[in-house]
Length: 528
Image 1: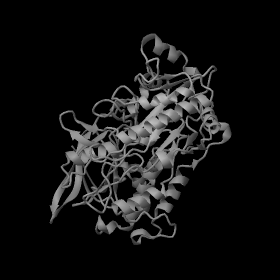
Image 2: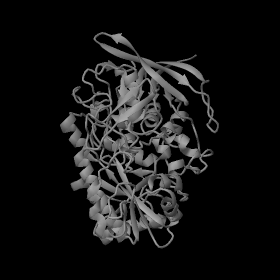
Image 3: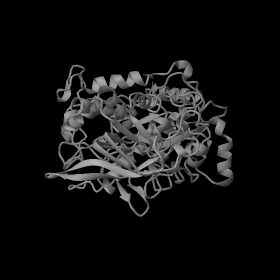
Image 4: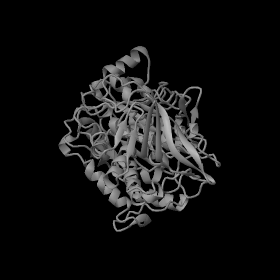
């Protein structure tokens, strides 16, 4: 048994966990332990082989909704999602956070540089965002870095009067290998593993990886509970991982403050199995996934589709009225083979044209519903993700699908392919021969396991709200009715943050870290 005592225990080393650990180490003298369920793989491990790199993902890439219909990707390694994402960087959207203030009574999170939220000097979301952007080198790529796939997407959009713009990316010294999603072998992607985690380790934070936290521990504190630590198991270090700081076996960690930053799937699961009081049945409910529908186009010539910077252009033209973005990315061969429709010779013929394929997708800002939720299954030992697209969300995705068909033909494709086995066209498939057939997208039913819709942006499963009927935690991230327990990650967003969430999560974590440092007497009395 490994027994550890510390001031602060942080569960999860991704966008939120590593950032808040580094921030606390920078602004306080508190002892901080950061635990991560996955291994600590570094650049030397990332071999750019799709199957090998599935170990970076939750459940080896097999995590999905309970019906198997929607893959729900997430990093399960040091750095979390920032290790396996495509570096797409969107600032927090003020309109979204202002809406949360109105609808969920959130406090703080000022966008004014001059604000001192909670009486903490310099504490505001604008300052937190500025720190994140600088540390992660967020910037737009140069024109010379735009590959064929992104160029074709841009051309198709503009030819139809659909505005397109460059992403901002957290990169530095990118060589354009095209393997962002399999871990950057060059440390050019500035995720938390190579930025805030290194800052945290330099300043004395202890990292323990391969560490699954089974439950949070509590003791009575008057009329409420107080979190006093957690226990779990350290797995043997996997081949290729960097060394651990603790031996394999059971572990118990006593802490004055526990911060849960395990992501929107694992955080509610941990609260469930820890029996955190939930009088209004809020844990895990209202999950949003940003469901995404891909499209591919077949061209008459070869295309640089994944090499270079995989994603450099997107369009928010339909965002205000229809709630979706068009985002240009491209899959490697294995993922492409899984996504593309067809069987046998037909599917083989599609894959033979891989070098002539271009693609992008629609990312929907989905509508929260209490029936969409995360729970914990003791029987399977895994989180259970129950999710169904609402009828209005299906209608918006149909509209998006039709627009994608039109855009990909406008970019010069000779054929457009939705990732669906539904018989949409007169030929009984989802392969379109011209833009005039875009209207057949109205026949999409999004039947489970017939049309592939994927997710990589789970959010809003342990919502912040000053009203405990609406959320599990207050604006400080403190769980209602439990002292010494904070939730800080994408699960704490009341609804979708409105875009790819990485920078918004990191900004939230930087903000909460600064706030905790300024209010540390609230959590760790007598410590400086």
